[in-house]
Length: 97
Ligand code: SF4
Image (tube, rainbow, N blue to C red):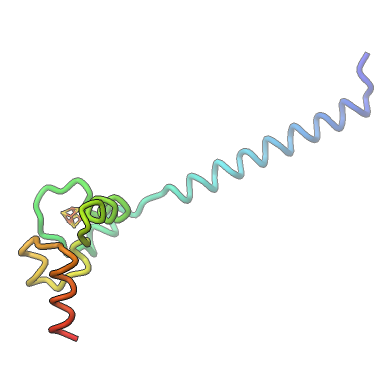
């Protein structure tokens, strides 16, 4: 036979744990939410058909893996040359400071 008190504590523990798990899931969903459409509206990249447009974390990761920088760090006239190298970035901002 189960002790009612023990049962009660177990029940409270399970309910609290379930709420905590739900809280963690909700929190991680909020963290994972991407503002892709909003970001894409503010993105200056003119490269056509890129699947990363508006997904800034992927964009940055993609370019940084090649030691490049994303389009948004370049002025429009330089951005449209698609030269996203660090050297070009330094050159541009050395000239335009
Ligand atoms: S900067 Fe590169 S990765 Fe980012 S949207 Fe433009 S082409 Fe795509």
